[in-house]
Amino acid sequence: MKSNPRPLALVTGASSGIGADLARELAKDGHDLVLSARRIEPMQALAEELKGLGAGCTIIASDLSKHGAAAALVRELETRGMVIDVLINNAGLGDNGRFDQSDPLRVSEMLQVNIVALTELTRLLVPPMVARGKGRVMLLASTAAFQPGPQMAVYCATKAYVLSFGEAIAFELKRTGVTVTTLCPGATATEFSRVARAGCSALFKGGLVPVMSASEVARIGYQSLKAGRGVVIAGLLNRIMSTSSRLSPAPVTLRIANWMMSSRK
Ligand SMILES: NC(=O)c1ccc[n+]([C@@H]2O[C@H](COP(=O)([O-])OP(=O)(O)OC[C@H]3O[C@@H](n4cnc5c(N)ncnc54)[C@H](OP(=O)(O)O)[C@@H]3O)[C@@H](O)[C@H]2O)c1
Image (cartoon, rainbow, N blue to C red; front, side, top):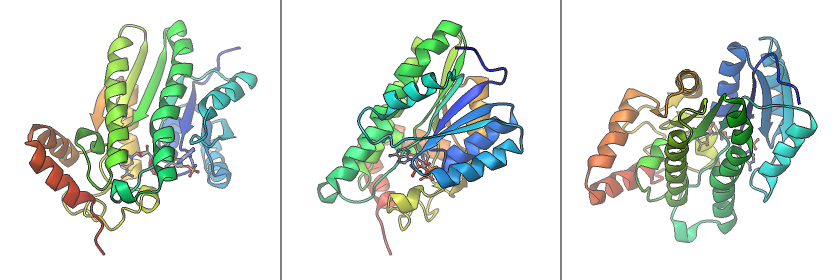
C-alpha cells in the first residue's frame, strides 16, 4: 500500500455534531478524509463541502454497534489501499434514565459503540502507525468520565473507560511517534441530547455550565491533537467542574451529577 501525499484521517461519527466539525478542521488543515457513520446523506453533503476545501473524501457506511464492525471497516480500508494517518474515534451515544428501567438493547449499543468498536479500531489501526513511527489518535471521552453519573450510569461508565484507556495507551506509546489525545467535552449542542433523551436535563439546559458549540469543541480538540496533548477538557468551566468533582467527597459528587442529569419538563 502506498502512503497518501496528503495525510488521511478516518473520522467515525462523521454524520453530525463534533465528528462533522472535526472533519472540517482536518480538511482545512490539509487532510483527506474517510467519513464513517450509519447515515450516508449527511456525510455526502459534508463531503461536498470538504471537497470545496480541497479535501478528498471517501464515505464508508458502518454500524459500529454490530459485532465485528470495526474489523470490517478496517478490511474495507485495506481493500481500497487506504493508509490511515489520523484516527478520530468519535462515534458515540448516550441514554438518560434509571438503569433498571433502560432498554437492554440501547445498553448493548452504548457498550459496543463507545467501548468495543473504539478499542478494536484503535487496536487495528495503531500498529501500522507505530511501524511508520508517526500517527495521531483521538478518543472522544467526556466530562462524564470524571464521576459516576446517576441517570446516565452506563454512558458515564463507558466514558470513564475511554479516559482510562486513552491515558494508559498515550503513556505506552511515548517515543513511538504516535500520540493519543483524549478529548473530554462537556455539554455540547449536537444531536447527542436528543438521541440520549437528555435535552430536558439541567446539563443540557446550561444549568451550571453553558452548553458549548460543536465547532468550538472541535477547534479545541483539533489544536490539541495537532500538539499531541494527552487529556484535554474543552472549556474553562468544564475543567473547573471536572477537577472539583474528582476532589469532592463521593456523596456530594453523586448528588450533583444526579441533579445535572435528571430530566425535568
Ligand atoms: N454532545 C455532547 O454533549 C457530548 C459531550 C461529551 C462527549 N460527547 C461525545 O462526542 C462524540 C460525538 O457526539 P456528538 O455530540 O457529536 O453527538 P451526535 O451529533 O449525536 O453524533 C454522534 C455520531 O455518532 C454516530 N453513531 C452513533 N451510533 C452509531 C453507530 N451505531 N454506528 C456508527 N456511528 C454511530 C452518529 O452517526 P449515525 O447516527 O449516522 O450512525 C453520529 O455521527 C460522542 O462520542 C459523544 O459521546 C458528546
